[in-house]
Image 1: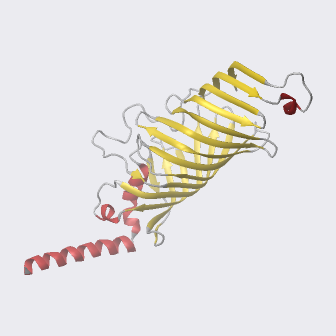
Image 2 (image 1 turned 120 degrees about the horizontal axis):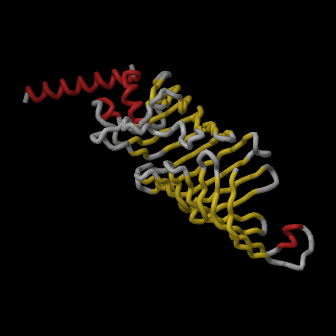
Image 3 (image 1 turned 30 degrees about the vertical axis):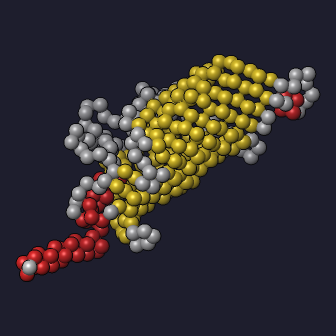
Length: 305
């Protein structure tokens, strides 16, 4: 019994010592935190700022200036502040992190560039050096994800800048549906007015690198005088850089339209599909009396930049 008590005392003291080390020096666990953030991707995560504790609510680790780089060393993203809530025991024992209770990112930027060959600066290397091995543990499950005030710089033949005011998701896990809510603004030299988007819906990120979206309801504001409501379902193929629209129902005033087809957003964006358009009050739409009161049109639709 005495030996057992001695053993328990030693274990307790060692645990308390490790916990004190973590509380006093969270920088000691930068590598574990970076691994939890990277989710075993081909990219390199580094924490260039300080690590600190957010004690409430709930307890979480705050990391400043988190940088994501490609295998060739190119900068892909920078987060000014990242808050990650994980169980302490795996960190203390240096085990693989299975669950991330919540991950929040505030401020920073993401660069996304489509090159003339069609590949992007985010394209993973093709020589097999992906940062993952066959024996790598599965990526952690993120139970809640929040993104605030993040700028996305999109560069192709035309350049655009998107400011994500907020983006919130439910539990993120491969091949499982999750809810999403977001608000963003898009501007660019080719756009006459800023585009404002509010969207909610359900997505599924498949292990085949496909992002399926269902019941994705969006409100798109084009300046101050035009607003579209869109209800869409389809798939985003990240490697092929195409979006398959199973259906996109669009409404504006007295106009109802639906679009199906394929949108290719590689080096030269292009859409091929079908358009169904109808209006119950054509005279009100053009603000002039017409002999035709209703219009129903079905046509092929091809568009490119």
